[in-house]
Length: 138
Image (cartoon, rainbow, N blue to C red):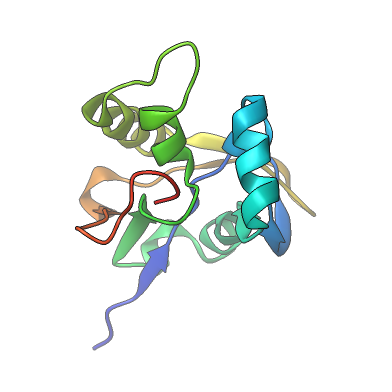
């Protein structure tokens, strides 16, 4: 028997197959956030690229879905360290995501229009950083 897993999305309703885009939280953030992206040249973010697979294959095709909160310049890091007017706590940011995946969120997918992606709590796994995270980009 196989264990099938999916590294799920950490984005918004926008969809793209490209994985070389700037992270939206920083692109749409403060002048300092945009300058940080320009100075580092970071452009390795996706836009719901995995949501298409989740929708097309169906959630029952996967044993679990892992949401990776530790990737460089993630929305999670932005919300908990850089967001204005004030960052939220990591606990609140995590609980917001749990609720979003549990209740479902919308994504605009080609050929399907606006669809709801839902991940049951029994299949939801979060990936978090350990000591290598620097608190700025990861």
